[in-house]
Every structure is written in structure tokens, then in C-alpha cells.
Image (tube, rainbow, N blue to C red; front, side, top):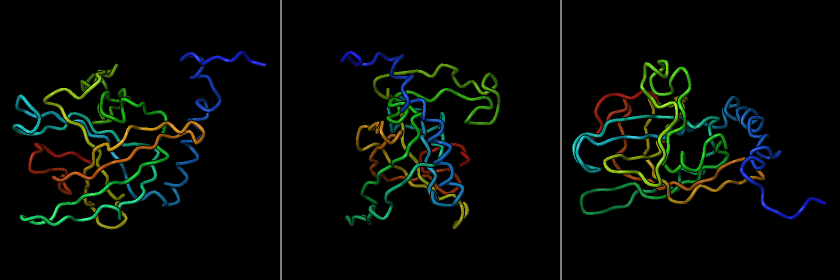
Length: 207
């Protein structure tokens, strides 16, 4: 019988559950291919031109799509709350079957995933783009930076689709038995427009 002890990081990375991650991603891609994952999900990092968050223009630093497309449950939980100046969307959704190729820090915005070549942001090489090969890491999102999730339909209906902006409502939970992350998201206002622009954003970002 094995000795009762915790795994060190190297042993944890070599466990069957962790090594099954690529296979799990390939199997989940079938849901997307069959049309069962209509909502695309993006991690978006931005920087404000002022000295603090909310001051000046908001510039997109990096946008990374979560692939394979995770399961979203469910957008009809987001409702409209009436107040004196109109209505605002409120509510939360759950993301599940999020690839464990992402880390905890990626999912809470503390670190960007490493760039691929071509770069995930602009389809240029990593060196030409300027994205970090080794992503910066922090225990919080420093001023004047910001981070949010953006959900949008895959274009089978309206094209371009409506974009919806969310922020983490819970800590990400690694469900090791199902080789996935799960996380709750909370709806926030000031969605970007269908063209990737909003009241605060400068420049156009593609989906």
C-alpha cells in the first residue's frame, strides 16, 4: 500500500486525472462541433489611461478565448432590475467544463495565459506582438488595470452578436474528477458594443 502523504507539485502534474486533460478537451470539442456550445467565452484584460481604474479611456491589453468552449448555465438567470433611470441587468451564470489548461490565476485575472505563436491577441508572432512569453503574475489586479469575462453567441443567430460582460462571483473550483474548472460569474453593466467598442473602450477588438 502507498504511504499516506500529499502529492508534491511534480507528482500532482503526473497524475492520471491531470494527464487526461488533453483528451478531455478533445472530447468536449465534440460538443462544440455538434452545435451544443453556442456561447463563446473570453477572458479580457484592459488598462485605463488614467491613474486609477475607471479614469480615462479603457484599452484592451489582451483577449483570450476559453477553448474548448465551456458550458454556460444559464443566461436566462440574468434579469433586468428597474431603477429610477431605467433598467440594469443583474444575475449570475455558472461556467463548467472549463479546460484545466487554464490556471486559477488565469481565471481570476491575476495572470495572463502564455502567448502562443501566432499570438492570441493579434495573429502576429509573439516577438512582433510584444505579449510576454512568461506571463506576469500578481496576487491582485493592480490599478489601473481591469479584468472581465465576455460572453457572446457564436454567430448562428445575430451576426455580429450581442456581447455581455461579467466578473467572477466565486473562486474557481477545480473538479478533478471531471477534469474541469467551474466558476460563477456575475453580470455587470457597460457591455461592449457588437463591434467591440463601448463607452469606455478605445479601438476595435475582434471576437
